[in-house]
Image (cartoon, rainbow, N blue to C red):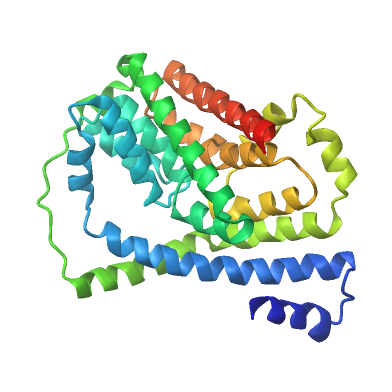
Amino acid sequence: MLKSFADYVAFTLIGLAPGSRAGEALNFFIYDTLKIFLLLTTIIFVVAIIRSSFPPEKTKRILSHEREYVGNVLAALLGIVTPFCSCSAVPLFIGFVESGVPLGVTFSFLVSSPMVNEVALIMLWGMFGWRIALIYIGTGLMVAIVSGIVIGRLKMEKYVQDYVWEMQVGNTEIKTMTFREKLDYAREYTLSLLKKIWPYVVIGVGIGGFIHGYAPQDFLVSYAGRDNPFAVPLAVLIGVPLYSNAAGVIPIVHALMEKGLPIGTTLAFMMAVTALSLPEAIILKNVLKNRLLATFFGIVAMAIVIVGYLFNAIL
């Protein structure tokens, strides 16, 4: 139905020729925009209802587990149901640190939340199929868990800004919501989140549509193809200065893969864009000292590069 509508608008209503660069770019843009917003609205609403049973206070208690490795796993899993971009995940990250959650555990959440969430899962599933979606989610969780464990092992608490440790977080009573209140919350949250991310979706799909219709395959493959041994780290370096969430970058990844780029290279680019960004670094600079900030970016970037090479080797 959506594909038929996209075909009608691009090729009948507007009159572009099927197979032409402009026609294919516009068709891609219309179809993917409609599909993504439909998927986003459905999945965010459902997850919001689920998350309404787990307010921040309860979440912090769960993450403060006696066994730190268990906390890393739980924090990474929590990221799946928190569809934040890298910057919007920082305030909750700060709240975890202030409330006494182990530092390594908080970093597992900070990596997982923007990179591995229901938005990424449903969009990857819709565009590439369940195998690619599950592989990405699994490796993303692995990056988040391992990165958090390594940072926790390094015992770098002294590189957190002093004022963070001095702040006190009171215990807030957990309010039990009725099912009607959960539905109202889910509706308001879905609308609020869509208002925040829709520009990223439209811009991302627009760039993806342009790449789909106009970018020459030989040019892209020559710089990021399988024959280039430095394609994966190059994709990560290009991705870090950019800033987007999963909703905005996945359409670009889709277009790049259709142009022949290896899956490991394109997904490494996606991970770098969503999990690491310059705006995130600027915000974290107010919370972390330079050494810890550089360690965080270095460990995550290295893990992403390894995952990219692994994907290219086995797929």
